[in-house]
Amino acid sequence: MIQPGTLAPDFELPDQNGNIRTLKEFRGKKVILYFYPKDNTAGCTKQACGFAELYPQFNEKGATIIGISKDSVASHKKFEEKYNLNFILISDTQLEAIQAYDVWHEKTMCGKKSMGVVRTTYLIDENGIITKAMEKVKAAENPGDMLKSLE
Image (tube, rainbow, N blue to C red; front, side):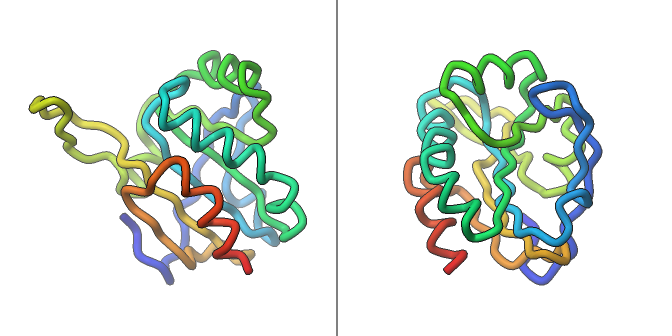
């Protein structure tokens, strides 16, 4: 995990519509950048729907929400449509941003070890500086916690 006070690494990756997005394009706005393991899984769906539900409040506070996983553009599009998600989903199939933000780690599930994304959320200020970093967040609570951190 990258520590607060650090310049957030930029990326150039496709969103759910296939448009190339960069972090730099959001300079001047706060960004909630969250990394999650997989589209359409229980925890990831709760987290995404929580951000979607609170989106108007994030927008009022001048914050953009961006979710990143290693799922494909097509998977993100289906996820967006199925749950009416109203924010940006970035596809990072080559793990560029995932590794740059240090969220790719060994995980253990049912006694089996494998590499995967550790659910992590960053708050990035208008100048591109990480002001808050939360690792191993609780999916259902994360959107509310991030909204409070903007107050």
